[in-house]
Image (tube, rainbow, N blue to C red; front, side):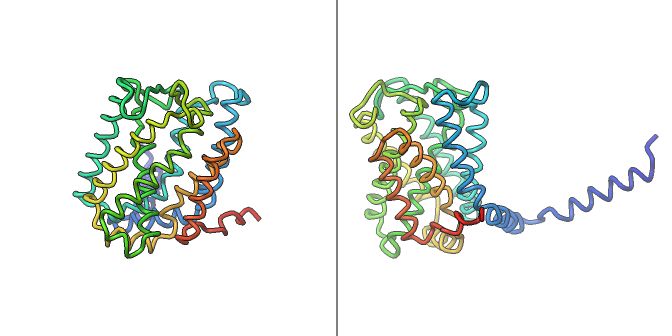
Length: 293
């Protein structure tokens, strides 16, 4: 038989907890905004720094099993670094956006499964480190890795282009170039770590055909994002949300650092160029790097 006093205390605690939870979507968005804003240094700087050290340590044999390349640690770190982008985009999500993003998720799986099986369009490659549960040689978490990359490029180009972003052809060409440039940073670093292998290639172990494949996927992504979001509303949210591109700050730190460690100087320089782009877009907050003082 339960103690009435204990039951009342439990009910009171649950009531207090419920009172602190948001009642509407807008309240939930404001809460998430505040959580990300108050933890920007941890998310945008500390996580990629620790991630770079852990990944290099795993590749070099400094990190013991089962911690070395632990897929759940990797996925957790990626999700945390993605959180500013997800929280930033959340107010712009409606049924249309969710539907088109679903199309992009389906394309992501389809092109990767086809690529692993046939070598087209990215060239022959295989995953050599587990990135969590796999399906047909492809990580189930693949959209978590791919889609934020193209959304980050899309958002950065909207900022840098300004009013010219309304020109669809210019927007398409610019975002395609940005996505391919991001892969110029990503793939050499991932190959150096041993995440995946192309069996050799002219560009730091990556075949040039891989970048032709990325032109195709970037084109599909841009066309899909154009249909998913209303450009004006997305641009307004982007201008008002100072942390929306913090995931790209993490990208610069993580993959720029990894490439620098392995002597991939050109990919590291491209990462620095993205850092310059973030500065020009007023999305690289230098105060993030002084919060430890």
